[in-house]
Each structure stands twice: as C-alpha cells, then as structure tokens.
Length: 437
Image (cartoon, rainbow, N blue to C red):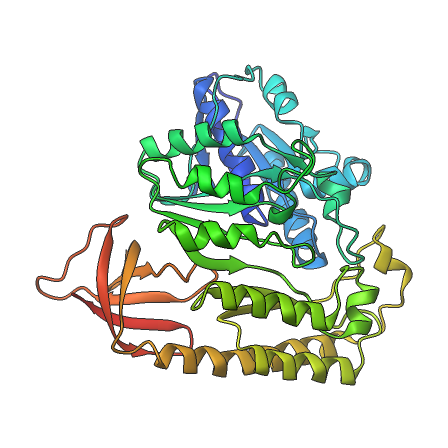
C-alpha cells in the first residue's frame, strides 16, 4: 500500500458523457491550472493523488458507466493508489443523497453548478477573471463552445432539467470574449453546444438571439468554422439560416434531434410539434440552405411505440435522407414524465428497431458519399492515424460524423489543425477517401 506523500497535489479529471460535460471539465482544469495545480485529463499514469470524476446521468447505460468508474477509483483509494476521490456532474446532481449512502468512501459529491465549491474543497480560489480560459482536451484547433446551461423544454423522456436546471444563457459579450481567448490560442473551429441552442437569449434578451450571437462570433478573427449543435425543431429561429447563408465561416451544418415522426409518439414525448410541422421545418431549412448537412437523432422503443409507429419512422428516414443520423434505445428514467408510462417495448425489440433504422441510414449515407466522388472539399485535418491523415469537411462534426482519409505517401503531408483542398477519389458508408489538390 502506498503511503501518503508530501508532494504537490496532482489531479486527474475523468469525464463521462457529452460534450457539455467535457467543457465543464476543461473549465475546472483551467481553474486548477491557474491555482498552480498539476492537472491532467484522463491520465494513464498512476502518479496523481486526487481524482475528480465528472459523471453522466442521462440514460441507464451512462449511469452504470459512471457508477463503475466511481467504484474503480474508490478501490484505488482503498489500495492507497490515490488519496482523494471527488465526484461531480449530472449523476452526482441527480442522485447525490443515494450515492453518499451507497458509496460513502467518496470524499465529496458536487452538483453540476458547484465549481466554486469544488475549488474551495481543494483549497483553490475561483478566479472570475478567467473568461474563456480552459484547458482544452480536444485538439487545439477545435473547441466545444457552450452558450447556455440547462433546459426549459418539457420533453417527457428527458432528465436533463433534473440535473442541469432551467435554461440560462451566457451574454453575447461574454461569449465573444471567450471566443477571442480560444482563437488567440489557435482554435479555428467553434462547435456551439447547449441543451437547447435555439432557446438562446429568451431569458436575458426576451427574444431568441441565436442569429445575433452567431453573426457576432463570425466576426472573431481566427475563427474559420462555426458549427451548430442541438437545435430544437419547435420554434426554430429561421433567421439563423440567413447568417449561415451570408457568413462563409458558418458551416452549412445543423444538428437537430427530432426523436420521432409518429404524431402519437411526438405528442406523448411532449415535443410540441407534429409530423407535418417537422417535415415542413426540415424542408424549409433545406430550401433556405441548399446542400446543408442535417444531423438528427431518434429514439427507438419509447413507451407505447407500436410496429406501425416504427414503420412510419423507417419510411420517413428513407424519404428524408438525412445526411447524418443516430438513434438511441429508450431509457426509462425515474422522475421524468414518461416514467409514469409503462416501459412496454422489450429491450430486444428496441435494439432491433434501432438497428433497422441504422441499416436504412447506412444505405443512405453510402449513396450520398458515392455522389461526392470527384468533388473537391475544404478539409480540416484533426489527426494522423496509421498511414492516413484524417480530417473533416464542413458537413462533419468530430467523433460522430464522416471523416476524410488521405494516405500519407511520399510528398503527401498536411499539418494537423490546418485546412487543405482534397479531391474525393473513393467512398464507403461513413468515410471518404481522397488526395490533396
């Protein structure tokens, strides 16, 4: 067993869940670094004595992963490998009392908005002057950019308001300063994120101001791409598409989770939109921005989903030909509105329905990618892996979308974080292959 040391504290921050959590971890790490802490993200070394786990509590599988991670580090603490284990994030916010009873060996639990409290526990000061200062865990050339916190939507299946509270927008001026700070350090792409991007500004400006924000961010020197994630379809502010059309550094890309298409499902999910309105919204967006890449996410196996509902979703996916699509199986989350419904779709049926949707989407993606052969695109290169340089077009977000692979042969060389023109020579279901122009 290790004995406690007198050496300077070294902190390992472990992040689970979504990109919003990742930003929270980066801000925490920036504060710790400013307080002269030695801090790393998901360190593989065993020389840290403090672990902070930023948990996810969104769906059952994510909750289990968070619990397993907590238990792993508690065991490490018992073995003397670490001295302190702290837990923060969504799971901790949602189940703090239960966790304190079930896993008492954790030194302290914190909620999603308790960063100052975490720092105080570590005898560190919360430095208000660190506007936009983060210790990026992504490659320096792109950064997730959170414009608000929380959500006011009443979606029946979603536990986010329980964990993140109501919607709170960050003022435009503060976001501009954050963007300038990132750009000064080499960030070229901002991936705008929020629980609900399209609600931005309603709380502080009394109207939707996403378009105003995106327009202002596009003026920040050094920002070459701005990408929009997690737009709600009901009440979508169409004026943001004018900014997308007029500003060359706003990507023709929109992440809009639609969840389902059956009117019965949409009503039960409390989405505030109908099938026809959904179709009209997607068509209006495509009419305004021809060639836009729309990413959506769906849910399979929501309570009461019949085979007819599933078939309706399949046909709609076939007809809509979304450029990017993902699907989750429904998770029955306590204290949500849908928890009062019977979780009556068997897990194997949920999975089979999700697989069927992805099979349709795979065929759509393959056909759309085949149409790109012979075209030339501006590609931002993220990394080198094996014998390939790997990058993305403006139609692709990191980790979830298609990638462009360029073979690193002979004189072929690109610098990571730079743009280059690439002619597409081949394509598979979810990847493009090309050569530098």
